Length: 203
Image 1 (tube, rainbow, N blue to C red):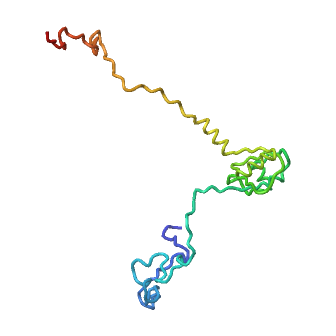
Image 2: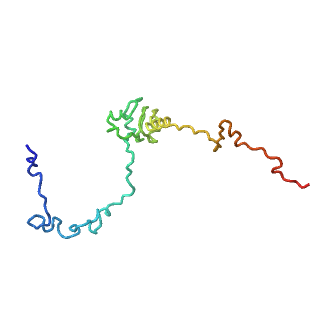
Image 3: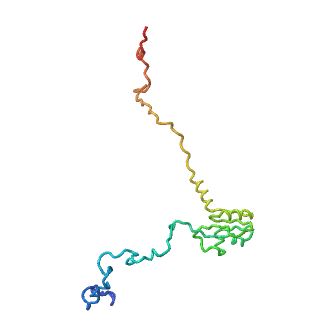
C-alpha cells in the first residue's frame, strides 16, 4: 500500500452544508435561523436568563439568602445509641465502626452526637465530640480520645518557638581600630586646657 492510496472510510468526511445559498441547496431561505426575531439576527444574543421581558423564572422562585461554604467540614455522625450496642470496656474507633457497618467510609472525620443514652463504660475514639456526648460518656465511666486535639498537641510540641534573644540595649559604637600602635587613644576624652572654659569672676 502506498501513501496516495490511503483514504478515509466511506462516510467519515461529509460535505459542509452551505447555508443561505437557495432552498435547493438546503437551508437557503432562513439559513436554519428560523423566522424573524432577535435570535435570527447576527451579533450578540440576549443575556442568559432573559425571557423576552416576561417575569424570569429566577424571580418567581423563593429568595435564598446566604451562601454555600465550599470549605465546610462534612462529618460522619455517630449517636450514643449506637455506642450502647458495644460491649463494656471496648475501644471504639472509626475503623471498628466501619467494620461493624455504622460508617460508610473513612473519608470524613467522625463526630459523636449526644442523641440517646449510654450506660456502658467504653473508650470512644473520634475526631470531635459534642458537649452533651462528652458529659454522658464520662458520666457512664467511659473515656474519650479526641483525635484532632491530640494532633494539635503534637504539632504544638514539635513546633515550639525558639526563645527570643536577649535585648542588645540599643546600638553600640564601633571601637576604634589600631594598626601597629597607630590610632591608640582615639575616642578618649582629652584633658581640658588650664584656664580654658573658666569664667572670670569679678574681684
